[in-house]
Length: 242
Image 1 (cartoon, rainbow, N blue to C red):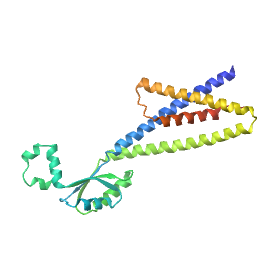
Image 2 (tube, helix red, strand yellow):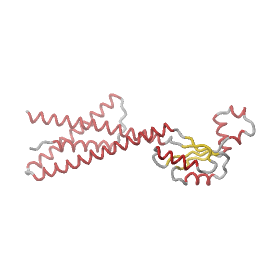
Image 3 (spheres, one colour):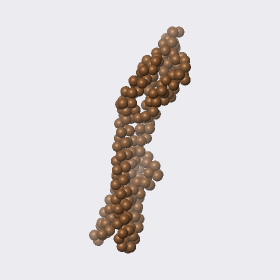
Image 4 (cartoon, rainbow, N blue to C red):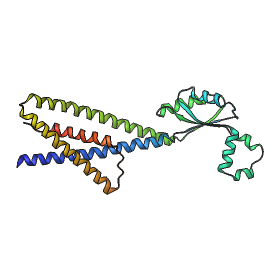
């Protein structure tokens, strides 16, 4: 009776761990997706104080710092036409020389994670380029992106430490099985099967929770398999063979 209760407790424990890990990894995947969506909007716009004609020259000067890449260069005349397109009312109130007052600009994308040091270095480097009049970007958006990337990095380090510890413990556990009596090898295979069953049940529980609460499960099939196998490893480690 006590042995049966112990197996039931272990089964429930492994299932709970798997469901918990599925939800945690799913949250991590959502953070990565969110960071990717933010990265597409991390534009830096550089305005020039006159109408530059040499697109290739401007692109070369901007990318020389290796901090940014040029997504788009818009000369003054094209910028004026874009302004009229967005607000046709300007065409009715503007005069002939208004087109000359519109600045040429370039839309840039960061080449690396734009932390505070990156932004300072970028301002200094781009500001030193001749004819650069103003550098514009959404600082709050950049800070939000950096915070998300730092959280993702923290999760990665935590996952690596935990996974390394589990793998080391599993190796020692398998060695203890192999070095014991032959009958214990059968116990090992039984333990592997029961742990996989419990882990798979835990995934079904997590999936049912997400389905019931309409919580988006964006984790991939391969990642789900890895989580199930990883949780089964924990079940193997926790097995008492004494």
